[in-house]
Image (cartoon, rainbow, N blue to C red; front, side):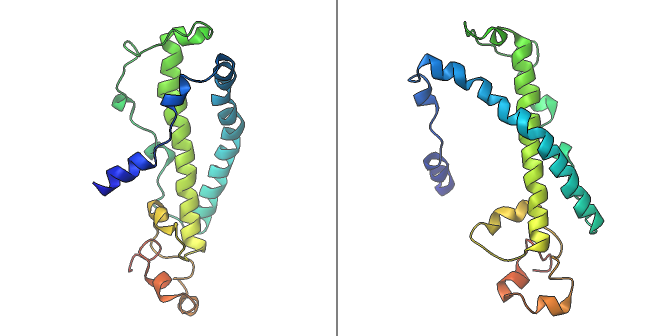
Length: 174
């Protein structure tokens, strides 16, 4: 029950404020959905390629693929023929089912998956090169590794704090 309370407390407030926004803000805000993705995706894709290459070159194996982060198409609640649409008089594309299909089945899951995948790869890099505890390190468990750079050399291992030596996120022998 504690986790449910935390989710509710950490919830972003948006729905209750949307209806209070002036029309001009909503109109200006719509293109801002796409611009950051259009501007960042090419760089994130390049970054993912470079990070994954780095990990492979230093011996990384069993690294998940991007497609492990993309939801299965059949898991989407709405098929193309029943995809809900909304009639926004000033935004003509919103009237068409294909607009929502492209947004809900392509844009959203593929872009979220890309950023989740990039985060996963960076967690692996962080766990490999920097197996030192801090207050957010538990969040890196999604990128757990067998042993860190510091664990493969017995002399370097001695330099680690005992807690860092035993951490199961970067030491499978914990």
